[in-house]
Length: 252
Picture 1 (cartoon, rainbow, N blue to C red):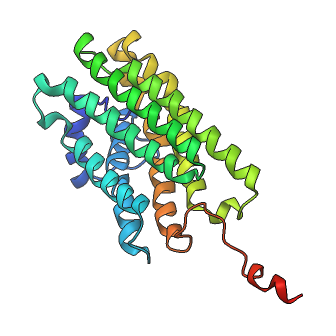
Picture 2: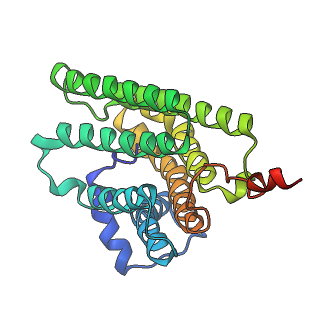
């Protein structure tokens, strides 16, 4: 996940605010600093989309607004929190991320049995997170919870697409849930193996390749912003519109 960044990278973020450099011909460290800078501030695209969107109502836009602000602060001040609380920070990051993604997918599906399934699994995941927190040692990244989170979100996404194609509703490109789910899948799919293998590679290897995980998360944040903007034109989520011709069938 994006939570794994070196202290040098975090301090370089403020350097990037005042120093400009050319992408062409820049050394790898400069590119890495640029990606880090873009990642952290890309979370602010979501609140910007909320402010410019016409609709300020609905649970999903409000949750995404909070998600953008909270995760911007978590990443921007990652190393301001004492190392003694790093394990708590990682666990909270993973669970808050899971809660956001699972809530989005919970709202995206309309069948009650699917919603209950997501709710029950989420409660089990919460219990697992608590148990894993007290039974495991502090690591570079909480790979096991992150891996389980990814698999569960993939499963919820399959449920969403299965329901969507089954009911043959409005075009996908006009549905904000489509952009949310695609953004989540791009992010989790592209970073899955990085996350589960993070504790099994050297710090040098991790520092060398980890910035590539920033790109799919930046894409995810852009798609989240688009979803918030589109939500104003599609406030009812994935619920099908009732046909206005039904009340007049008795007149035929």
